[in-house]
Image (tube, rainbow, N blue to C red; front, top):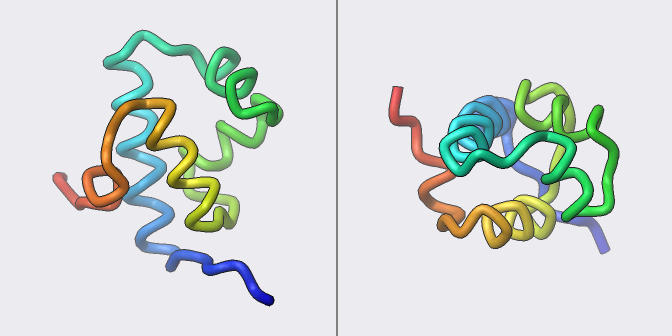
Length: 77
């Protein structure tokens, strides 16, 4: 059973949006990493779009940031 991964373009968009939402909510990378039980380096790579992330993990991040998955994947630039 393979995990559903998202495209590189979507990774870049999601990472940029996650970073902005996290900052708007005054949540540090350290705090988000702690909430997800992952490393700060992982959060940094997610925000830079430089690591693969499956939809389950992305949905978990969205839940913690209290935003929808569709909002995080929306290109608003």
